[in-house]
Image (cartoon, rainbow, N blue to C red; front, side, top):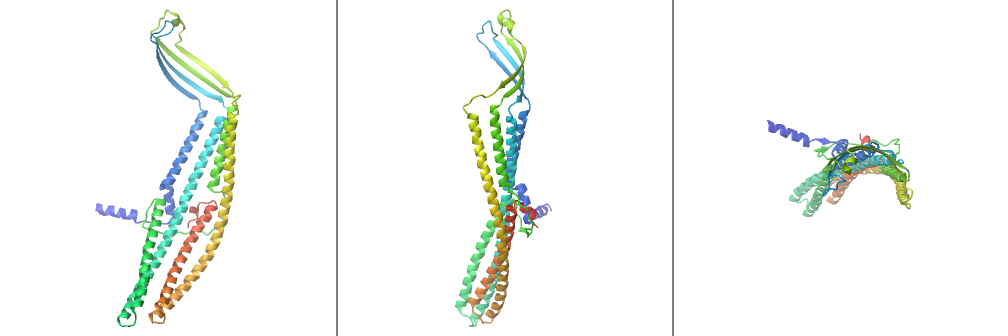
Length: 413
């Protein structure tokens, strides 16, 4: 009974069918690259939190031990000290504010990068999903063609046995049958390759794929891709880092309070040292400093960062132009594939009609096997072309949504 239960659970786990949305949803949670991107964003978030902690006072504890041998009468032989120090930056010229902004922009850039990577993986899953469908339909057409050829070979052989057909006719059909068998094996390999890529991207392996379609594009609002947002955040981070460097020319004011507890051994209490050694001391210190001259070191470093920002700004503008170009091309591709789909449908209808007519004539000897094979091949090719065009159209819709700045997953129906 227990063995049957385990077997049933195994069949349920590995025999489940998934649609495209289910594969993408699973990849969002379990794809290793997606998980890596999420961890990188968490790392950037911790950097922001670390920088924000710089606003708080610092508390340091410390201790020391010194042994002088030989020790003069004016100093103790052994000294043990412990201290606690509290410090706080009263003014840093805005440096910490700028660094916090820079870390925040870098964190947002990592979130955009995470989303960009997720969408890239999503597009790969979409493409592999529909290519699996293409190869499955091609394989089905080839297997149907194989059955048709096998039936005709058997029929011609029967005719050959009673002298109504020649061995050459059987050989020609057999050669086409063998070539079709090779095409079947090659298609199986292509199908297996795409399936493995699909399972790798989605992080799950199912027993079959349910059909999925994308909604027809209508009134889609265009918005920037994550790539543009990443570059903008990186440019803002560089600008903030330039501000942090600029703060180096501003006054730096810090307050610090230190409590010191000392213990002295091996000392001549009657000597000079015994009267001047302090066992407890509290020291309050306010320090201020300002950079007056460094031969332009900070200035040049700031200018270098600003040039980097300008370079990133140019990359952002290029990314915007590139996205607009790809969006226009994606829209044109949809129109082209619609026309191709209409043509492929008409061609398939004609090929099926021609095949039905030719096969009847072939079976009564009105046409030769060349005409029959030509009609059969045209039907097979037309069916494969029509199915491939249908799936190409779905891929084209996903690409259109992507370059419109949308999440293609939201448009799966």
